[in-house]
Amino acid sequence: MLEELREEVYNAHMSLWSEKLVVWTSGNVSARDGRTNLIVIKPSGLHYNELSPENMVVVNMEGEVIEGNLKPSVDTMTHLYIYSHMEKINSVIHTHSTYATALAAAGQSLPVCLTAMADFFGSDVPLGNLKVIGGSEIGKEIVEKIGKSKAILMQNHGVFTVGSTIEEALKAAIYVEESAKVFILSKIVGEAKRIPQPMIEELHRNYTSNYGQNRGKEGEKWQKLT
Image (cartoon, rainbow, N blue to C red; front, side, top):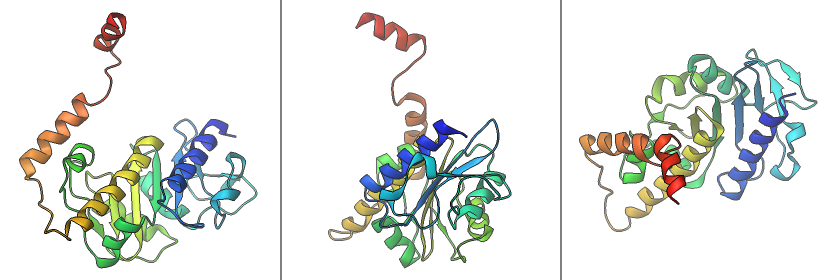
């Protein structure tokens, strides 16, 4: 069931591991199938070297296991709340990546202090209040506080990222950790300078409009020329 999506969710978990955004059994990735509205998510408590596409768990929007012999992640209801209230989101990723979680532990949001942050996020990475894990309360806080960002730091807990695709949510998880690392290290030489809001908006607009390969008619024209 949902073999291709299982494979993608598994590969995203392996990327979290290779990027050192998770340790031992922490963190999880989920994705929603647009046709069936079913969710594929990591099984609870398994080490990353035990994961496989086959042991990813399929649940419905009520959290009932539709396919799989293992218990789904303890964060399942958090993911489901996000999906039920953010219809354009098709992937949710949760990590405890070191630098971003350090800010969460200190109760600090992450300001746009790098052009790469302005490009991709288009806003500060906000801070959500401390909530008990394992239920919909974290999901509710994320939906209320994340705004236009693709990432949020949950106080005393960790990081959640969202995306219309698994790739987008994974990219957000990688970018938020790198940005947090630079922000924290910058304090050795001074205070990080927040980019002015008008420039943030301009950079984000240019990035979303122009970055990457144009696969339309102009892209086809370029391919013919080369």
